[in-house]
Amino acid sequence: MTITKSTLITAAVLAALAGTAGAQQTQLVPPRDRITDEAIHADLSGYEATQSRIKALNDGGRPVRDYHLSKAQCWLDVSFHEYTRNDRSAFPQEALTESEKLIAGMEQDVSPLPTDTPLVNGAARVREDLWKRLGAIHGTPGFVCAQQAVACGEVELVHAGNEFNQQQWRHSKPYIQIAEDMVGDAEALARECGAPGVAPVAETVLTANVLFEFDRDGRRDIRAYSLQNLERELARLREEGRPLRSVELVGHADRLQGRGYDYNQGLSERRARTVREWLIERGVPADAIRYTFRGDTEQVQTCDGVKPREALRECLIPNRRVEVRLQAGATGKRPRRAYNPVGPGMNRAAPGRAAARSRPAGG
Image (cartoon, rainbow, N blue to C red; front, top):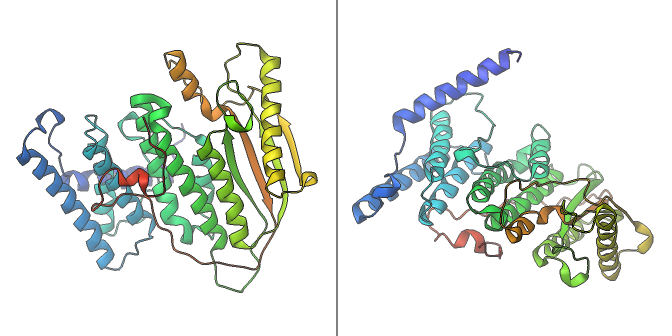
């Protein structure tokens, strides 16, 4: 591996932050000892103290939407959320430590602060497509408006990966959905960024995935929350005043080939047709929609080692999808808005995290 100057600088910054955070780090009571009021009170006091440090940074002039302040808050939120759910793994402590590293760096005016997102507690890197979409916003002019959604989306993907490791996809699903919403919000905020009336917003592509039950391709076999995501993207186009130029659909199947490769090809085609019919009923012109199908050749989640069979089928659901790409025209409308993160904050009960935007319950 080639060692570059930027690599050395990044390593030095991370080492400095780790050392600074270590000197001020909140140490949660070991899980086995969280059985007394005194132990729980000590941990809650640590969380409140960390929250107070974030508030002090904001009081000192660092904006709420700042990338690193937002990321410190979201690390704190997911740590607290899992602590209140009695997560006995290292995740609450490690997520809290990431928050404190960023806080220490901001308190000491370290520059540049790191933008990496560690997979704490060995979290799985789920939904690489969402990681790429968030990464694409970094360094763009729209990042200044989208930075809060980007930061929290990255943390939420780690949270989802941790839940995936613990109880597989069904358990991580609510947090993946939160991350999906954050990615959509980040992209919309980046598109809308800029002074009103200076120029039309360029043409863009919005994406959504419609998910199907195992070996099914009908309207009733679509997971309702995934269809809601597509409806949300269509509504976003209307809100932004964008004309819908065209729609591309790509049908897929999971890797289970009980009836063979050709069967999965046909299954993916039927799924694409089902979504096409749904869009036509919603007023999208038929001649604006084109579709292809790729069977089981493009898996986004492998679920290696997942057992029993029912758990494997549930884990593979991101592969049983129709990718929807909405090609939207330019608009001169710039509806400026603030981003409202999903995190529970320090003053909400843990269930509020999933309920904040009518999230489906995980199991």
